[in-house]
Image (cartoon, rainbow over all chains, first blue to last red; front, top):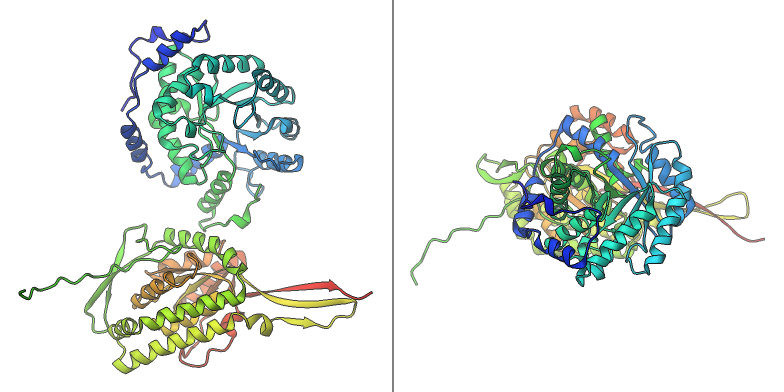
Length: 320
Length: 286
């Protein structure tokens, strides 16, 4: 099944002058999402059985895609350093385990994380723009972003202003993303929609196109602070959007589901979804990430089960 | 109204994992016959993944169960005995189907209930009997208390009710959670016991019960790195060595099978087999 297509690719203007009216007309001109169909499609793909060597490969791929995340009020520099050590060498007993893609922290700890992962190839992702609510003046959001980049963050996870989006003020959301994009400099920009607050799949599709047009390098489902967080159907809609966006403009955008992905089975379901929706081009840490914390231990447990033949237990892996 | 033949509503015998009654994830079942070889029921034939799920459920439940006061655990176990009492006839029927005579079945049910009550009474006495205040040379009050081991795997013996009760109750009374592989030839009383446990305030996951092939399930339980101890009461003698070796992977406590007369006075050995000792040095005086 291919998702709905845009009739005229020439309509898509990227990072050019945008008026509120044009933006609104464009986003509301996107074909609607068949909600039942999307749910059904995601549920059916989730039943795919991935076993033995394919599973081993999927586990390693999933580990390399993890944005190992700690976003707690109680985060300390020590905890972040421990998390970085874990991200660089997830299983000290097995050097064959790949590194995670990035460590995701609050901006004030981006410097600690950058120091801890220097030279390892692991990225530092920092949430910014008044994460998780996004309720702050634009200047504060941009200052937040610049501080994170200056501290060494190589990726910025920004949140959109859901209030403005739901009120129909797409231009404000667009301009915030463009401004944050500029404040990022060389850092990659991931745009978080908080799909749990967007209410409909149509809104998810609109938010995806809006963010991609505004220059997002990645689109991300959720902050992890709101339930429901990432779900398969929402990710399906976003994967269709990045696929169609590349067809229309030639620019590839990554996808990051985050929140609620806790088991290896969940992670593999997402990988199947990526392969079947956007295609194998997205099956790399460059274009697909999993925002998670407890997922990594489950992946390691499954990996050890495959390696040793006996079930492992959570006692045998570090908590953070 | 004319007499019409009524279709009986037959019970589906399922597994008991985390307080719920799922079928085996494998979808398999096996035929359970009565002592005369006639068909009794289809029981679920659990797979290694059911073992995995049961261990995860037990691990999740063990902390909360261990944190309850011994008094509360005793109350809950006594409640289980009350529920057992209400199902005496059903258990007696199931034991008769498994080959016991009428009187033998009734008395085994009574013994099983009495055994459960006996163990329930131990909940708040175990600490006093297995713990101690230790004389030490120094200004310390030094005391040892028994703590639950954690998740206990149990390969239940063939005695379908009394034997089962005699291995499950001592494991959980001290605060352990259990994953039980029921008797392979006579699993139906075990499933009925699970229904009793499910309706008696025992938190879901404290006891998880699997039916199926012992030879298939026991090795996965013995090798599982998140199981802290294993009771091999019902393991076949030629499998014991291999199971013990698998259990050594994470230094499980192992209770070897022994010739056991389940109707004899049980003693405390089965309770103390699944305990750890915590010793505290508390400064005093000065």
